[in-house]
Image (tube, one colour):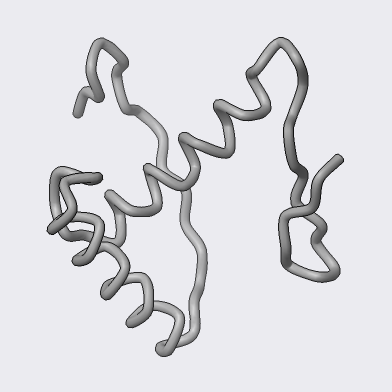
Length: 78
């Protein structure tokens, strides 16, 4: 079982992407790795960062700062 800091990582999330979107994620992951924002240049690491930030925003006691709007596939201010 992997760990992230003091937290055990025990669940997986999976999705399907277009080839173009996956390649874009790979480029973004590489850029984030070079800038030191993630520890490895992988799509998995980028995905973990994105989900962690989204979940942290919803754990905030002040409530979520933005919300995902499924029809437009965008985040909107609440």
